[in-house]
Length: 199
Image (cartoon, rainbow, N blue to C red; front, top):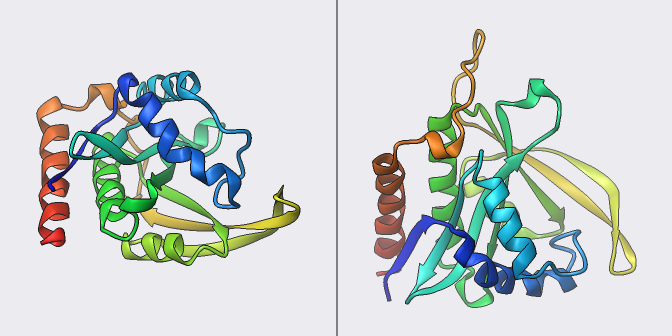
């Protein structure tokens, strides 16, 4: 069954919420309780004013998603973004995470972002391997930084440089300012790769 990487829309909110819900009862995310479809609609709409939010679709059903968001609040961090990716249980280990991250990083680079960061609640070998496969380098681990499910949890930080840095950077182009044909071509490229890897 062919899989498709495409930009998200508010209409994907319930499907994204369903993908995310199983993670709430794990230490993979520090969030709880589970956000519903209305909250996801708010997040998708708000995120896509500046950053990409992509979904992976299989047979018309959303089986995963990835998005970028602000790394830190101060203006000096305007060229850095933090990434997140979540896959439905049946979609894990089949290349969708790499395809979503790859497309996301390519779009962020075109927008003018210089740094991408990923955070992994440890231990989480599949997520650690995903970041390494996608060109991220391990930076450091914040020990016992979050309390969830009756224990202190640690958070590992990963980094990927998206563009060369040197001199004053141009302002980042908000996601809606990207050329639609370019966004479509990036999504199609990673969709083709995803389906080729499946064969």
